Length: 343
Ligand SMILES: Cc1ncc(C[n+]2csc(CCOP(=O)(O)OP(=O)(O)O)c2C)c(N)n1
Image (cartoon, rainbow, N blue to C red; front, side, top):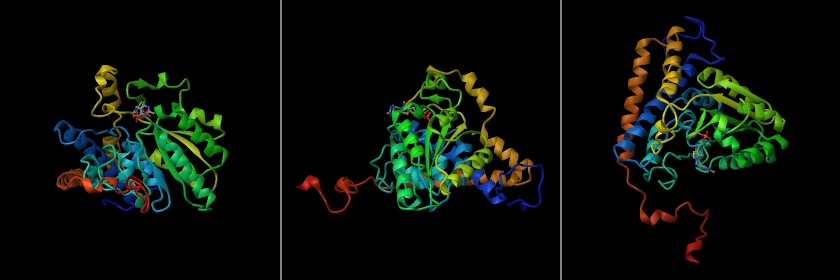
């Protein structure tokens, strides 16, 4: 670490975070970017069938992960949550095991690629059914309340497109009525595949929907990890303390195509993307930490070398793993010894 918290350069509104936490957020963002690229590269090399990118979501996810209480909170992620998964403790090897569909993947390669999970870390399995996981997330929050497990909360994430789904409305409404400990984080990247926000809703902000459920709705700058951390920390603390749900909308952007299966040149201009790239949160946060004296150029360089090395090692290690065996086909399908296919 370059300097202690006391020795400051240019002022940085750090949201109460220490140098170590700020650097951890930057490292998370750099690793997200590296792993995102790796997923697209491996797909183009014909080594994996599918990848999704979180480019443009790095700051939201680094900030939200920093607010997540490991060991207590549960994450109900969606498919674009690489940085949240990493930020709550998942490793690049686990992510790549999912992309390569190897035996070392927690779902043993049976889930859709990029749909990782980690029960021990409180990361629920990802559902490809848009907003389908919101009902599951609310179920977990209801269980926390029912069992009197105070101090625990669920972080349920979606894109803005998902807020048009019935399950999202039902989940938010139920959570509001029952005062459940849950935060609905909406990562508004302006696009739902080829559908822009204004074809999705008549309100300017997703957070504007919150009063309709009797909930607080907060908009934050999703290009700033510190701004996102601040809002998410407050919302999760509210949930931990029995104050009920919050809808947080983090404004960000999707720099890449929806997935490796999508060609976004058919529905949006390169100029629009270039314009947004000027606000790219990764180099901006790196620069802000350098200017504030939290890190120096040399450390920034080392961090980038470090995440590249980590990504390369994890890629080689995951690729070398075996596929699940045919005999394991029924493993983890039904709990306990019950084997309906044998009766
Ligand atoms: C119920 C359902 N309808 C449609 C789809 C196809 N689909 C996959 S991702 C997606 C867009 C979702 O957009 P958004 O919620 O804004 O998240 P983003 O991908 O932009 O992060 C759609 C329509 C699906 N998976 N499930």
